[in-house]
Length: 149
Length: 149
Image (cartoon, rainbow over all chains, first blue to last red; front, side, top):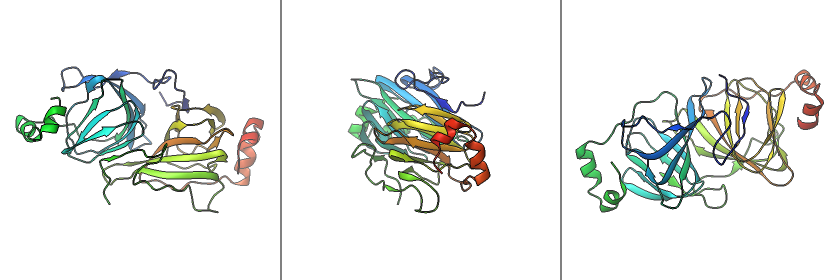
């Protein structure tokens, strides 16, 4: 089906003709309470734009890959690990995840964390950390306290 | 300069390390009161993500091109022409502009209209309407009342 020219927002960050789906296949990777909506996916566009929402206390998968992420926070607060640094995030903050950089989004406890994420349409599969990768990441106590894997 | 991992929003829809620039070179094409901020531009990303803001009563250029646009409204209200239809737009509405489709964003009078716009990094130059194109578009009275060219 071709994309309609305008898809109005119905509920807050829910849209006409956009399905709310699971973030990933259950059991495929560690994550908790995340939904995914593909907003734009078009042969004429070299990227996709998705909207992810992480429920309070939930988190995306700790992973890395050759493709990059361009993220705009749209609702809520939380923290993000990018490489070896943890950043607080709030609405409209911009997050850039370079290639092959460990990253994980963690929602705060007081509301969902929602963000737009642009990625190349053609992209590699995410890599999960090995036990050795995890041990290296957790050598930093702040990262050890944040990451869920 | 490489993109920092996190660029916080400073003022509303203004960011650290993101310059507010003119929409287009003055005189290059008809437009009124539009600013542009390039949020993500990265060799690892096949698209760019920009934020445009149209002041009350202002408008983007009426144009078409081979590349597509994927737009998320972020602030304010207005109307958009896509092809031969006019749509009201409000925050978080999604706008898809297919290849070679005339389009123009017009802000309402009560506040700025701001939107994210994803485009292919490699893209063709926009085409402006000829007098004949304009006459065809203006054959529809609603479009004649909206478009600025």
